[in-house]
Amino acid sequence: MSKDIRSIIEALIFVSSEPLSSAKIKEVLTDVSPEEVDQALKELQEIYENNNRGLCLLQSAGGYLLATRPEFDPWIRRLLQIERKSRLSQAALETLAIIAYHQPITSSEIAAIRGVDSTGTIKTLLEKKLIKIVGRRASPGRPLVYRTTEKFLLYFGLNSLEDLPSEEEIARLLEEKDIDQN
Image (cartoon, rainbow, N blue to C red):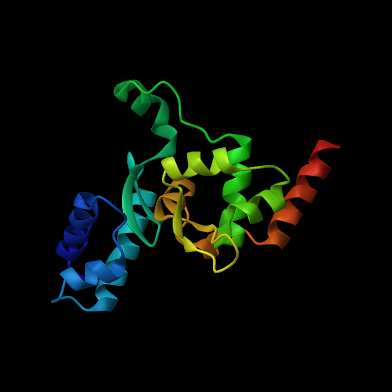
């Protein structure tokens, strides 16, 4: 395989303002076989992983993107004069988890699961573009229906919703945490 293909793909990922899917890369590289593109992406990931660089190649939100390595976060924040990360509140995380696992879902369904009104939290998640309105439910009152966005996938470093842990995995992790705390 030509190093040029890897370099071209690296440049495409670098200039893309959002995660670049392998399908889009294959669209652009019409003179390269899909297998060669897949192989080049795999090689690029290995190169970034094994060469102790300041950047890494992530697969997130259905595509590829270049990002800084998490261990360099303190220096990047200092350079960009970022005081602290914008964190989600416990209520926002709970609401977001409910939406992620039960989407599409209405605010009344979210409130029924959480046991409290979540209107304010939903508004915050909409403002942060972690969720979006995807329509109205065909039921009395025609309530709005919510889903997670691609920004949600990026925020949590997920490639797709299938990457969310299953209920069994969560239960196992919680059991391990309980054992460790005793």
